[in-house]
Image 1: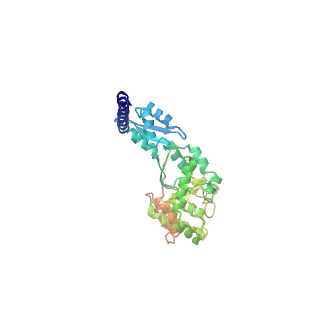
Image 2: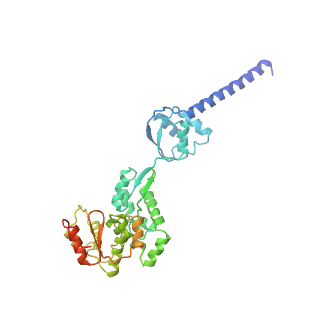
Image 3: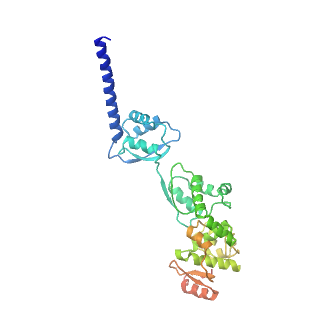
Length: 340
């Protein structure tokens, strides 16, 4: 090789190496530095099946990154351009391109908090779900009332009233009414464990009866410590063949209840009016929590047959009707005096 050609060859190698170093350093600088350290948080959705090139270009358009081509090269070098997860992300140009890429590769999608307290019925749970913006109320109710779907989840009922376990959940934009419900019912099965199932069997109760009874306890309880005592009243009345006569069941059976229960309501027959029917209503009237399930299975030992609210969250318990009537007069003078 002639000296001039030899020198030209090595000059080309040197220029290529220098260019590679510049590109490498430039890419390293690009990957580590955010576009705008003061950038606000925005919602960014990666659609299912969306190509990485399209994602990168949209990120540049929305101002999250400076250069879509560099972002694609960064991802390709790391073999991450085919590993990102679809979903909704909370992103910001204050994050470096490397951090943004890592967020999508790890699937750190936005999670919506949903808190369900004890004692809610399906329609009330559906309203709270709708408030997250993830699923419409009507869609949630429809899924929860689907008999075939209910039985596919191992629930011996025609709908999921009482089985959507109260707790705090975190869902994502990809979750549907069915996936949300499945999560809640799985939680119910975890709480209603083998010990509780065996206890129900020993008491001669089906799981559906236990959940139904627990829902009544949940709706009547104002003070947590009273759950076992309230449970004992219901068990004692059932054992004697007495009607349960509990207002929450009457309310559940009223269409478009306006908040005021009347004597007409108490006299009107519905499958849930425990002033008219004997035994338990046909199903739960709300979702009971763990404490109410346990109270239904392990009630306090008592001879109480009646209770009346003291209007402070607690109840007065009585064994005899005459004592109960005196308590009603004492605590409910200004209210409707109906024995439980």
